[in-house]
Length: 285
Image (cartoon, rainbow, N blue to C red; front, top):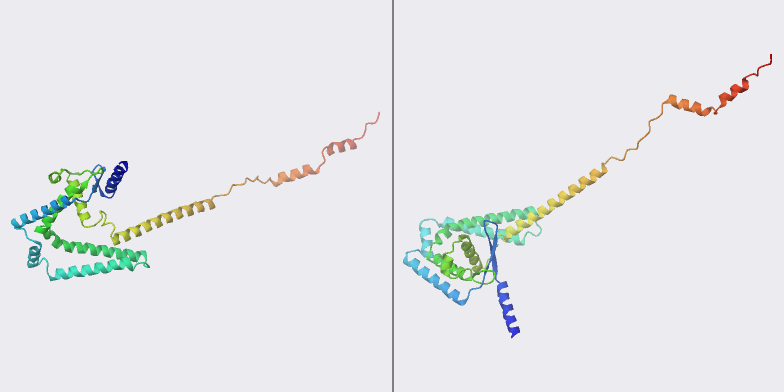
């Protein structure tokens, strides 16, 4: 019995550990952790029901479908042959540069890899801007409105706290959430999860990874060069350091040296003795 309870406990812990997590930082630099769990069968059915309900209501409210919106954009020359050709050209160029960056740059210099990565980033941004010409109007079609409703419902059901309890009691609680940053962040993370994308997918594109790697290499080289320069300066300073001065006594003047020589050449007491030898004794008168 104890083993069965322990197995259940381990299974629950495995489910909690396998959840996808994300964080939300407040203006006060406080970080909160949240998690995305897999939806239940009931959650999926109710999410699909939300899709159908919103789609039908959008039809009643005379929103356009995606095909109708595309026809309207073409009729207004927003999407024309020139636009389509430009879109295809950018897509082909982006694919070619990505292939070059990922497979043909093993022997390239850092400068060549950086130039290719920057070109990929430029083409990706250009493609995004071109798509926005269509994505903006398309976001208000029946299909997109219905898909947003399904995403919102799933968000209210699968976002959890660390302990595994739901963050919102029901769909209405999610829609009434006063913390707008939390609801938007949660919805965005669930949308990425549904599309199989990681939270930091924009930071891990091939071009961003390459640019980050080159920047890190340059930083390490700059630090190494600075350390080498400082070490070289320390060595030069030690080499140029003046040696200890040896104090030399000043030379004695020549006159003094001569006097010393004379004094050294005369035996001590010789003058007195010579005077005594030459003095004559007095005669008696």
